[in-house]
Each structure stands twice: as structure tokens, then as C-alpha cells.
Length: 110
Image 1 (cartoon, rainbow, N blue to C red):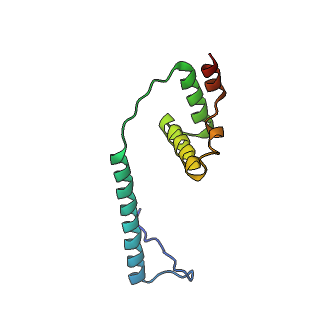
Image 2 (tube, rainbow, N blue to C red):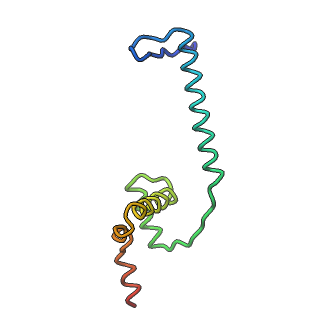
């Protein structure tokens, strides 16, 4: 099977000429390269973070991840942390409902 050139359409819906097509392909390559470099930089800055997870918590995390389609617990934990932090930045007094867990209240009362 031979390799076929992809037709790239301009803003007017017509195929780009050879010069414009080459320019557009170069622009797309550079964008992919910048995105890959950015992702690589983020990965390089990540820190391993470990914590103990007990069987009940593990089952809860598994259920959440399975239900929401997360591949790893870290993805879910990261999103929760980022969302709570965003809420705190927006309104320092309105975030408490996000971390008002009934199980924490029981532990404090004991």
C-alpha cells in the first residue's frame, strides 16, 4: 500500500497549494513538538508521593476509578486536590463543603 498525501483545507474550504501545505504541516509539527516538550517537562517535575491505603479505602478508590474511568488512583487524587485548591482560590469560605466528610466528623467525636 502506498503512502498518500493528506489533503489540507484552507479557511475557504479549498485544498491548500504546495507552499501553503508545507507551511501548515511545519506549523503542526512544531505544535506537536511543543506539546511533547511541555508534557515531558511536567513529567520531569513530578514527585513520587506514597501513602498507606487500607483495604476499605482501596476498595473505595477502585470503585471510584472504575465508575469514572480513571486508570490510576493518582489521577483521581490529583483531580480532587486540584479542584479543592481551585475552589479555595475562588472563595476561601465556600470550600468546606468539599472536605466535610461524615467519616472525619465521627473520628473527631471519638
